[in-house]
Length: 108
Image (cartoon, rainbow, N blue to C red; front, top):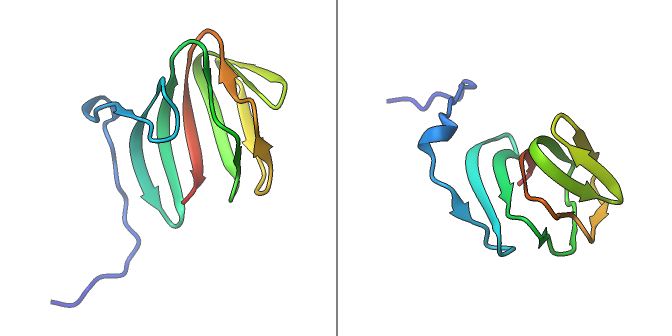
């Protein structure tokens, strides 16, 4: 049977996916929602008091705050705020004192 190389759609019910503990930071959980064309999408949940480790963005990164509050590069983000980090930018104090939930899109 020939292999089809046509683009496809993939749909995910985020409520059916379990939360996974982050391999990078304690107090962070993720739900992997999908990957395509070198990009990935996750739901990310920070417990109160989490500070994410220093990291450089190897590609563009997009976040959209759904709940709570976070600080990125000195900017306070609350529900409804979006942040865009270009490739080569560095996060050295991304944190959430109160806890938060956000949608993350990034390069893989």
